[in-house]
Structure formats: C-alpha cells, structure tokens
Image (cartoon, rainbow, N blue to C red; front, side, top):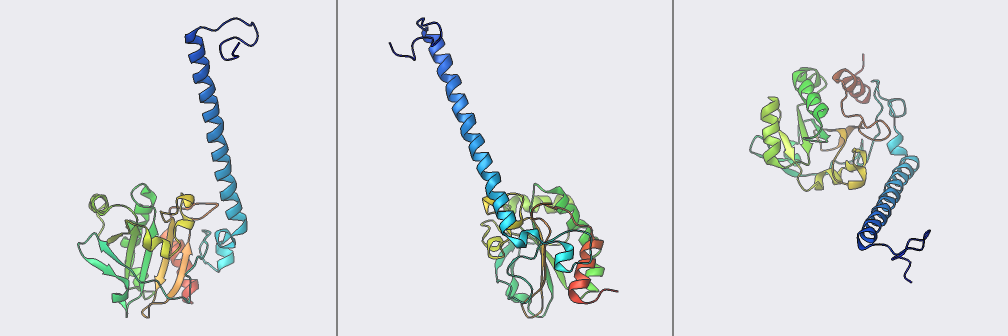
Length: 237
C-alpha cells in the first residue's frame, strides 16, 4: 500500500483531509529549509567578500582620516579620473560632471528615500556649506538611485536647496563601484554612504566610503567629515 495513504506508525489508512494536511506541512518544511539554506549561503558570501576584500575593511586609521568614523577607499579613488556622467537633477536641469571643469565638486552617493539619516546628513552639510567652501569645494551634489518623481517630493519635504541627481538605472553608481558599500551589496544597485571629491581637472582628490561592512554607517557628523577632508587635502590645523 502507498505509504502516503497510511500512517507509518499505526498502519491505518489516512483520510483524504489528513493526507492533504500532511502534504501541506511537508511542503512548508521543505520551503523553510530551502530559504534557510539560501540565507546561510548569502551570509557566507558576504563574509567571504568582507574577509577577502581589503577595501571594505578600511578604517580612519588605515586611510589616514582625521575623524572618528571608519571608512574604506574604493575605486576609482584618489589620483584617478572621475567617470563622467549626465543625470537629471531635482532642480529641473541635466547635470553633467564634465561641465564642472574649473570647480571642485563633492559628490555624495547615498541610500536614498529609505535612509532618513542620509537626508539629515545632507541638511547638516547644506547648513555648514561655508566650511566646505573654505576648503575650496564649490558645490555639493547628492546622487541616489530613486525615481525622480519621489526624489523631488522628498527634497521639497526636507526643505533642501542642494540639487539631488536621479541615477535611476544605477549605472553611475556602478561606474563608481558604490553598491559595494551599500546595505544591500548583493543587489549591486544602491550606494551606501560615500563621498567623492572631484577637482577642477576632473580627477578624484578624496574618496570616503563610510557605508561599507562591518559598520554600515549611514550618518557621518560634519565635524568628522571635515576632519577627514582636511587630512586628505593637507589643510588640517
């Protein structure tokens, strides 16, 4: 007799209702085991990436930072040309990095709509822009991978003046290898909490990827950012 129609312990025939109940329970157990295996594999992959990639283990001490927050330095990094791009801006224009030659531009790649600490960081930077200007930085631009429509609404709700660029395809973020330092690194899409200073000649003077493993920092006090910048630019006091 088919073992699926009888109880293994009593040998009695199972009712149709009992067979269906047991089949559903078995399916649920198999699904749970499958997802557990997938989750374990994901954790293993992240752990392997962390221990085999020295860039993600960077710290303020390792990279010569002056602040108290750890950061890595990804690639392209200092001394390399900044990949050019053109993105739509929340101010209604199309921003092209190549058109800023002659200016020092600080790019802020961040998680976007779901990261309120990122937006708080933007507001603090905006409020203290004079201190960045004192270091020779002409403008600050934020890059997220969120849709322009919702990004505009967020910028308006937060009362921000600085334009935010919509990298909706994530192509620019990938060109700068930003997803490596995001909370969802395996998705290879969203940036973490990274800053790239592009000088007047289009080269990178400073890069700090604060959002990578193991801390996944999503907010960096401006005092710490400025301290790291001053060390990198040789203007610390």
